[in-house]
Image 1 (cartoon, helix red, strand yellow):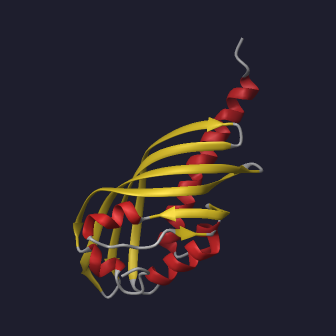
Image 2: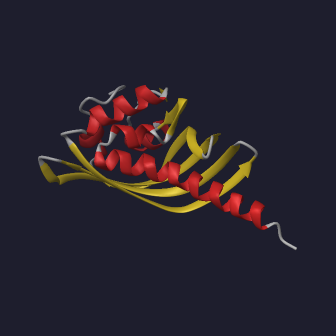
Image 3: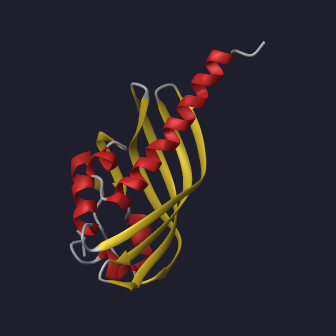
Length: 162
């Protein structure tokens, strides 16, 4: 006989793990500092370097929830409109840690001129940690599969490492 309680808890974990990436995406799109920050552990790392290498940029590894949130929101708020779509999440849970891969399509448009844009299709490799009933991103590596448009115009102004 199946252990229904264990199955429900496993489903809850799966939903919360995927929700961490949804909070990451929607927090950026809405420029909602609290929602965006809720996706990360305090000591989180965000590695955008593999994606940025595709167009010749060399941003630093971002470390710490507050630094990640401040850096990204400062780069986009009032300057870049974004929409993120998260698909194909694959989750593996081991105790209080989890791994996930997903595809994220991220549209970036200059607020003043939507004709200047960068559309990125990225592979996300995510390590997460349990925080009570919630899951938070501990490490996020973003790898670019392809892009169209002008990512240099989107990510240069105010971008660290450029």
